Image 1 (cartoon, rainbow, N blue to C red):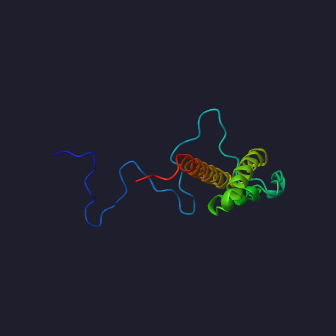
Image 2 (tube, rainbow, N blue to C red):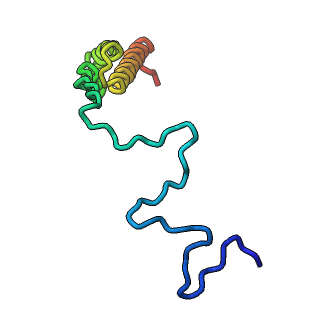
Image 3 (tube, one colour):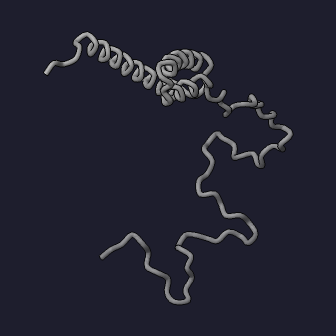
Amino acid sequence: MSTAWPPPPPQGGDPTPPGYTWPPAGTPPPYPYPPPTGQAPWPGPYPPPEQYPPPYPYPYPVYATPGTNGLAIAALVLGVIWVWWVGSILAVIFGHIALSQIHHSRQGGRGMAIAGLVLGYAWLALLLLLIIGVGAARTVGPVQG
């Protein structure tokens, strides 16, 4: 069986492969690849720090968000707490105003504004069904048995 590896050196023999000589003591090992032709080797150490240009300044609030819209919070609270019909109407009004403000000012709270709108419209639909049901019950009159 033949392998690409040379046989190991005999016990106590010289481990240097044939055709290789050790560099003189105190010199750094050679770089494994010669520099490309027509190109000078690397000039040396980096320039001192005072030769670098100063870094670009960052605008102060790079990561800061403008906050949550207050009307979005109000729309959500009024949508959850149904204060008869007034809360649901105000939830719908505040939700639409909050969505418009959020769109223009890039504030947070879009999900709260949408949730307030959905709850406000749901409460208004329930109120409308209640009014229709009461009106229909009054027009039919009592059931005669």
